[in-house]
Image 1: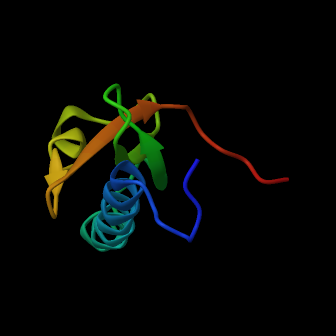
Image 2: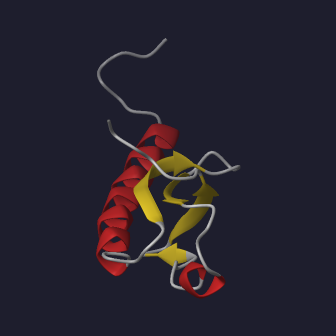
Amino acid sequence: MQHGGRIADTQINTMATMKAALQAKEETKEILKGVPGINGIGLAWNDQGEPCVRVNIDSQISEETRKKIPAVVKGVQILTQEIGRINLE
């Protein structure tokens, strides 16, 4: 067992990737600002275990609006998920 604060290479890569995902999330928010049918933008993990941006969309969103959602921002994958309308009451 090693001590002394050394961080494993996988942890360093994950932290760097998470930082990129956070930056991509902010840019994605700007890109999609005011676009109807976007219910939320957050961080998630893709199937490979990498941080990505998740765009939650209304199930009634038009195909034209779907095309406005980028597939990649700043090298970070953008995923979409239909979640329906969110009501905060």
